Image (cartoon, rainbow, N blue to C red; front, side, top):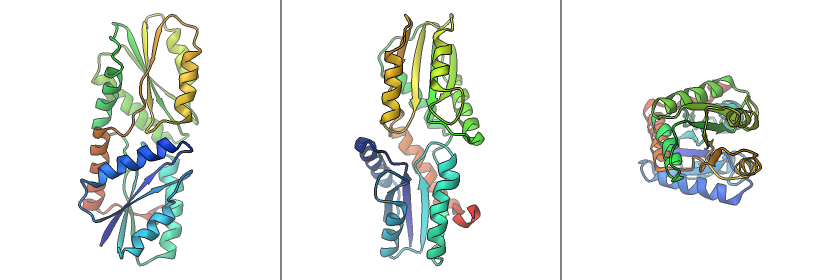
Length: 253
């Protein structure tokens, strides 16, 4: 009997964790596996070990792990596999198979377009978009984010699209925002946070934009959030893992 274990990041902000749980519960409705558990990597409970043991208590003989994370960076490549490998050593008779994070999925560009549309702000001729990710030193993550920006630009009419990071990579959000504010051809800037949930990072961006000394229109859009289109992307990842078998966690050892 199979189980699906969804791993969310976790947040000190209670609302962020509640949003994650609500989102995964919507994903679960479309997955025809009776045993499905939710865990958090950090800052919240249940832990990965707690949720894994719940699966075992229900008599499963395979656990498919799906990271509810945007990119294959440090958490996906190192932190989660480290925990899973420890569990695999402790429970060798139950294979742990690892699926993909959300990554570069076709639905994401549509979500980003919708975040701008829902602001209700008319788009000027020379508009720019600043995409803002949490950030990582992982080069694959940065390549994926750049690919996402390229696909987004292809589907929109925006004059200028730039990527930036809140931590761990460059350009920083502050540097990129200043560059766009100083770009004479830009008359309007939409700031698009590529984040799954609200939290301290969103509050920091809000303050930075509020403190700007500029006559340009700088509009902070809503974070990516647990959008219905994102639900479809995660369901694709689950179904693909169940169909293809996922990667055995020992691969990361």
